[in-house]
Length: 222
Image (tube, rainbow, N blue to C red):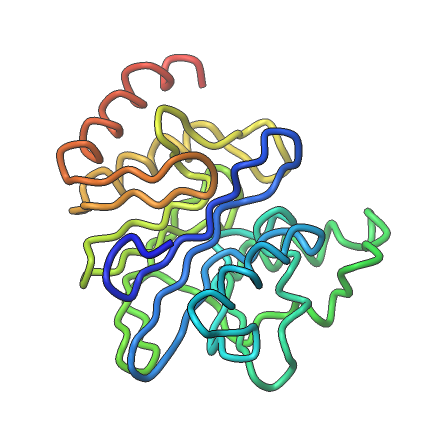
């Protein structure tokens, strides 16, 4: 669904199968997909792309907000040499350390998961699209939040959700770091909160209230 001009969401709504929300930024020159999700769930993204006249081969860049399989496993399905993949280096290092211990997966080979470049704090220009990258660890060592200034859109991955926040009881998670990252992103202007799971929040006041409520309700328990 189109939630703003040239900004589409492919929300995951199943309550029985874990997967993530996927987002698409489109311009006259480039197309960027954020968090393609699990391989087994990727058909719903393909169907969403088809409804707007696109396919996986039309994606110029896939951005992973972090390296958990429910967010980026499906990067292995994009055509080699056509679509680039970007991830923060800290999560790539985590993947390289954990992958051999897990024995890999049938659907994901490590070489298909290698980033073409690493995300770092600062601006990222992809053709005529300008994004801001913020390193926001806590849920994972290399989690990032992406801000698209043209739409005041915050793509937060599993940092913060509507009424909730990301888990820290997993490898690479850290509660104090997560709180610091949430406070950092709360200072950014956002009219859209586009999280990795759950509902989209619209309106600057609603986004601001959500940050305040999450800190008030959850920080004491981390």
